[in-house]
Image 1 (cartoon, rainbow, N blue to C red):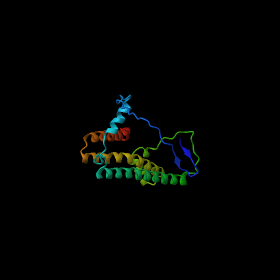
Image 2 (cartoon, rainbow, N blue to C red; image 1 turned 90 degrees about the vertical axis):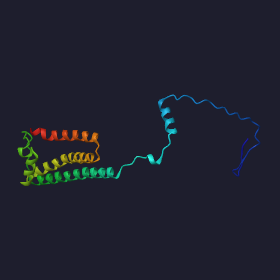
Image 3 (spheres, rainbow, N blue to C red; image 1 turned 120 degrees about the horizontal axis):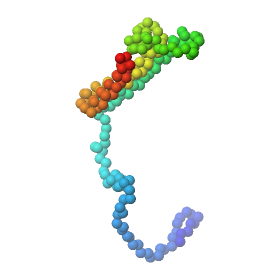
Image 4 (spheres, helix red, strand yellow; image 1 turned 30 degrees about the vertical axis):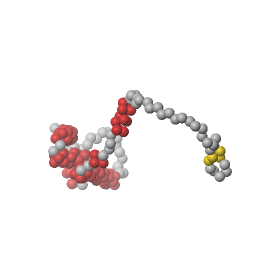
Length: 177
């Protein structure tokens, strides 16, 4: 029996003789697929040379695409904000007439019309230009991805990217024809 004394040390009486018997059981069949997968994972050895990493070209492409999206959205937002501020400075005190629906003027229905409106000093044209820049940002990303896949000769990715690019262009240009 164990005793606890004031000096925090353990004292024990001599143990009686006991016989230890070890029984080995046959391995049980796994009950589920999860146990089988766990056994497979435990039996696999991870080798440091098998760690998948990106090539410098892939890292550079990822860096370019992320910066394109980041700065494209920031520039488009800044242009829309500038156009909105200029519009409110000149037209902010005008009363809003919601009784009659006024459609978008014809000069804002095409990219050429938007650019001509911006060059003529239209504040609404500046807002529309910012929206065009926002729409053009992911399209430019798809074009850059397509060029990278062409350089890498990844045929499957080229085909998929061409389909995406064609659908984006059709959605923009199809409205005019």
